Image (cartoon, rainbow, N blue to C red):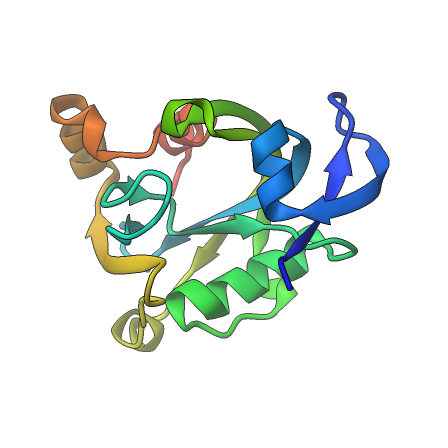
Length: 178
């Protein structure tokens, strides 16, 4: 059965119903997601290389981890689930630092995929053991790349087409004191 997602009104309030993920994106219904930025003890940022078989943004560098919040689930529990699924890392809700909420509106795949979302952004720090045990989720993530903040901004400046664009997240990365 297809993942069910709570639908929101354009102001972020609950619309009072849930529907399948494919309908959410076919109709551009507002919904909630999470972004998780993982850092190591040296302040390097973990980027995932999206799978080349992904429907959207295949083969591009993206947030460390991200995903939809299933109907009835909480943001922090969705973040913990996504960390386990996409990175193979087990964390508890108290390991995540909530940063901010943002919105994102995007039209992909020639207009067949409408992505209107409110997303919660979290930060985590991975231990050296966790860094060595990262496991990309087949079909979702092809690889992981660690970059310093300076390396990220330099690479993005030279090749913005290689990154999924998250302006509000990138603004935070520019301003954050690690």
